[in-house]
Length: 112
Image 1 (cartoon, rainbow, N blue to C red):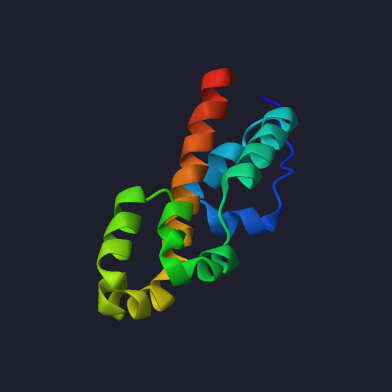
Image 2 (cartoon, helix red, strand yellow):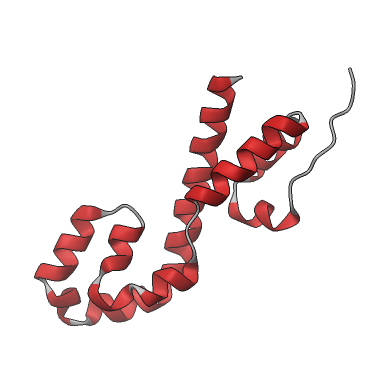
């Protein structure tokens, strides 16, 4: 069996589960390039999450429409929820990106 060359940038490893990184590393270069392109389009940024925090729009950004509505109707939990989210945004974005990494892998494997 021939060995495949990984073209995955190192920073991607931090944005996806280890099992997904290993699986993508085993793909041929064309599929790896397709994975990287699709993942880059769908991943979210922590900085943007912080910029959208003010109105609770960070929940919409991360695909959590119902939490966005709850945030709006409660005034950010009387600002308590807002203060907690100051510390939670990095882990929320990381969790979202890991979910997207798995979804993109599933999509790429279906197309193979």
